[in-house]
Image (cartoon, rainbow, N blue to C red; front, side):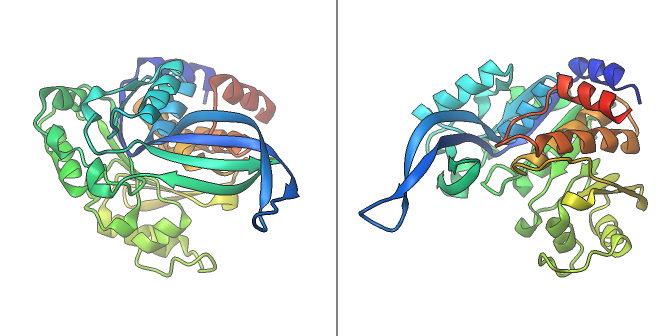
Length: 328
C-alpha cells in the first residue's frame, strides 16, 4: 500500500457522518492540596480546551486525514453549540443546519485532568428523545446529502440520533440509487436496533460479544470463529472489523474470517476516541477502493497514533506518513 497515494485520494471523497454530536471540554490543572470543605482535591486550572466529541470527533478524524465530512446531528441554539461550531469551522468540518432544533441541549462532556490523569467527568445532556432527527426524513436536502455521498457513517453514542426510523430511511434511499454509498456503523448494540444492510460494522470487543449473544463481561473468553459467525448470521454485514484493544483487530468479509492484525500502539496515554479514529480511517480507505486488509492496516496504524495523544485528538496525514516511514 502506497500510503501517500491513498491519502491523496481522500480529498475527493464525500462522506456524511450522522450521529450524536458532542463538545468535549478539557479542564487541565494541578492539584496540590485537599479542600477543607470536603475530602476532595482542589484543582488549580491552567487551561480550558474545547474539541469535537462523539460523531463530531469522527468527522474531526476524517478532516485530519484530508477527507471532507458533512456532519448531521441534533443541537440547539445555546452557547455550547456556538463553541462547537467554532471548533468545527477551525477544522473545516461542515455542520449541517438540518439538525438544529429546540430542546436538544448541546451535549457537553467536561473532563477534569490533573497531571495527565482524568480526575472526573461531568456530562450535560437532555433525554434521548430530544435528539431524534426524524423530522428530516422527507427533507430534500437530507435526501440529497445521502444520495451524493460516497459513504454514510452512523456514529452511535446512544444519545438518541441513531434509531430504527433513521436507519430504515437511509436504507430506503440507498436502495433507489444506481451507485449506492457505503453504509458504515460504529454500533451500540444494547439498544437492539435493526443493523442489517451495512457495508461495514466496527464493534469493540464487548459489543461484539453482546451482538453474538455471548457473555460480554471483560473477563469473558473471545472465540474469534464463534463471535464472527454469529454476527454475520444475525446482521449480514459485508465487512466486519472488531477492535480488540491491545489484541489488535479481527477482520471478516463475506461471512468469513480473514484473520487478526496486531496492534501498532507503542505508548498509550489515552484510549478516548480511538474507536472514532478506526472507523473514520476504515471508511475513507474503503470508499477510496482499498481492500479490507489494506484499509484495516492503515486504521490500525492510525489507532496506534491516536492512543498516544491525550484526549480526543485526531490523527493527521503527517503522522500517518511519518509512521509509515518508521514502519518501513
